[in-house]
Amino acid sequence: MSGFFNAFLHETSWERRHTKTDMHHVSTLGILFHALEQVIGKHAKQNTKWWREHNQSLRTHQEISLRHLYIAACAKNIRANISGLQQLLTDRELLRYGQLNYELGQLMNEAYPLLDCNTWTTNQHTLLSLYNDIDEEDNAIWANRRIQEWLDWIPACCRTKESQNHLERHTSLMSPPSRTPEITSWSGWVASPFSHTTLLDFSDDGIIDLLRHYQSNQTRTHHEELRSIGGKEQVLRTLKDAASSAPTRFLGLLPRLRSELDEHEFSDYALDGIADHLHHTIGRYSSNKEWAPIEQPEPTALAEALLQAIDRQPGYWRGKRETGEALLACSGAHLAPEYTKTTIFHLYGMLTSDEPRIQDSDNNGSGLISSAINSDRGRAAEAAINLLNRLLEEEASIPDLLFQLLKHFAKDENPAIGAILLRFLPYTIYKSLEQGWELFRTIMSHNNPDIWPYTEQCLYHHYHSRYTDVAPWLNQLKQNGMEHGGETWGRISALCALCGHINLEQFLTELISINSNTAIKGAIAVFSHNINDRKCHMECQLGLQRLLSRESVSKPDLDRSGSRYFCGSLFWASKPKQAANT
Image 1: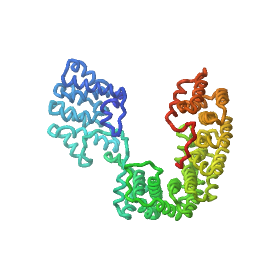
Image 2: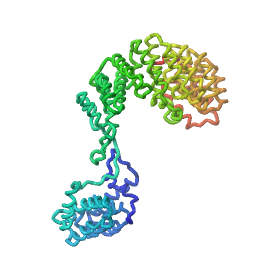
Image 3: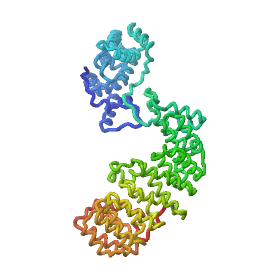
Image 4: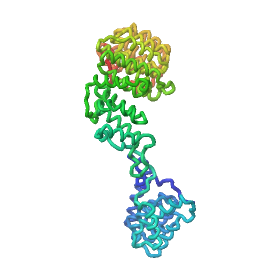
């Protein structure tokens, strides 16, 4: 058993030598050991008095990191430290358990010509008998490999006959030693075995054959030199990129991907890539300079062809994540009426999807919007409201089935679905007042307090000209939703006061009596944002004076709340801009 301690070895240069990662952690201990290694190496190179007095304590210390510092320092001046190296290379415990095989091997290779013959013999005898206590056959193979690696560092002219025989015997059975550091951990970016441009260079038959290779048990290699090369998971992503670059070609390949490959993930990712192309061309995705498709079909024609592909196998595509993504992409295209109906039909199929589950919807962490856009029903709901808004923008007739579908989504018990609808509902209300507010009422009928913060855009875009529609919701928010929607109530109510819908003095009195810090922060954000507007300068000044003069005011909290909105465009007291269909 080893008597060594290993508390700090991973803080030394040993760590970088024996790991392969894209980034290395930097710690204060690591900086300290780096400095120690540099200064001790300098002392060893100059053979200073300090080095002569302290090198033995480093060489014999049971902490491996200090042994490592000694070995690294000796490499700077081998000749002056030959006596210490002789003892180091005959230390059986260090050779077997020290974890410094590579560092000692390098040093041994350079120092051997300077060592005496007795040290050669003792060192090699120690190495050959290093694992004599191992009997199991499997372990014996490993032990002989380790001995082979040690002996390979010794210059051929310095090896004993026994050492040379061992090397020759086991080199014929095993691969030659690599004389490289043993990698103890790997991390970093795992690349695909090939790029999407390489995949596109294949014929259609070649693509099918290549993808077939990565089915089932074809996974990442564990060969040390290829651990950063991925397998099926990375190939699927490459397939998606290829389909995004050449969507028409892969639309034609979809039937073969479904019928000739055992695993349907390949057709799923191809469909996802085609949808990705539509997202880019229609403008849902921001411009990406690296995205350079080799095909640029007309978006509407591509969307209609994509819907036809889904329509050929409705049973398979029903309720799938990739289907929701494809329908969302198609909803932004200028579809003919029959394809609009096809889109609606398949969106009804998405109602059966299990995602998002209520327990996965997080309003305190990533948020309800994040839960929605990362779920099947959430993407489908977004597609439905997007389709409605596009038809309203084009002043086209609205199929009754589409509005009924949106009511189904609005009734969803998961607040994430309501949140994603509320994100796009301001434009719906602007273009179709009755339908928009009906959807709003349906979403809010669940009385879920988590949903209130997501109502703010709807209330903001219509408080100025439709205060009678907004006022009841502000009252309901004040009664039931202040815990989550206090800032929303404070901001919208303050805007209503500045434009004269409610009495400012009464609002301030009510706000202070409610004693909600979040509501007060919301109101302060509005007053501070509009104080330079000559039309409401006095009102904003009065509001800030009243709210900031309270004894219970928390200045740090208010500083943060004010700065968050000061440069935005959300809280102007003047008439809000028209809600955009985005």
